[in-house]
Length: 143
Image: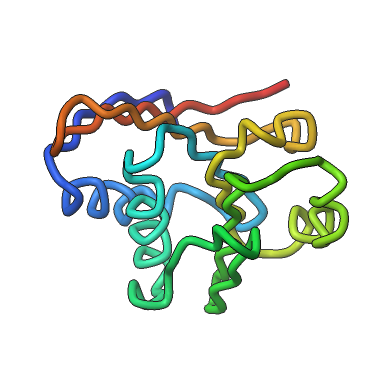
């Protein structure tokens, strides 16, 4: 996937974009979502999951438990690191094991664990333009 920049005009557009893109991500890949509170990161995750045939209703932010697992033919492991205080908390939940599992790893607030990310991941940056519009930039990061 080449770098992409798009303006979404609604939650429905953000969801649809992520759903279309979901098949671009192979099992074992990592998608890092950044942006302020309310930018639409969880909406994007719902779209990714829907594109992988996971019920949209099953997807919710794991803000208080760090990770939710959504089983399916191609599972999604949804991390939310907003409340991460220390990187040692990642090892306590089996971070390295998740990065080795088949399925898609999606990380909200992934910048908080930058030094623990794989050498190759997709970065989805969501910026708020106004109440309805979001600028979404997607790029491949290699370190």
